[in-house]
Image (cartoon, rainbow, N blue to C red; front, side):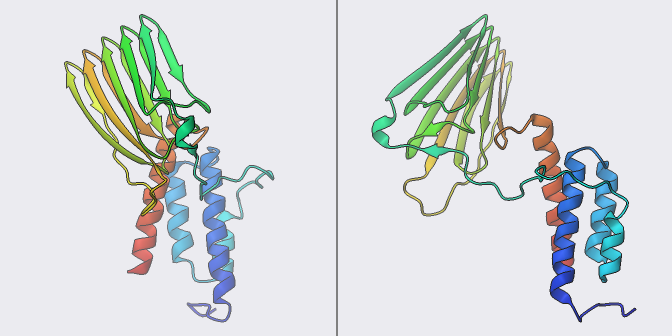
Length: 226
């Protein structure tokens, strides 16, 4: 067969995209390891015929319906009117734990304190007002975990003494005056604050796997364009 099948370019590209999606789903379900995923993705992008692409996924088991991994994610943070947002909210954990998750409403200024305890702040389904929501987290001999969705702007700053802070900064929607912005100030004394980006329902392990896969796909796409 000819090296490049130009008679049906659109079907081949659609089949290539479908093969990448299939491999992504199998990887997410631990049907294939990361090294095997990388090898198969390389083969998909270098394949030049329909038969070559089909052969790359032919030995994989059929995926059950309704289990597709979403590659495009709708915004998870639900914006509410400014009138619905309280001026201040607070959570305190003293030798205990305090979690905020689900469809909770943080105030324009939210304060979280953890003394020999743990505080959790999950903003993936939080109902946020337009503009800036300022979050101040202070931990002493304790810890705090902050989870933010990938579709809103996040700006972080902090100070740690005999402790650590994992910060995240990301841009939000361009030119959208109604967009929500999270400004996180973290302070840790002999403790730690971890800020991570996850999709709704996503575990820490799943997030690491997704980011690694996304980096691999971007690398392959750049190599293909070159």
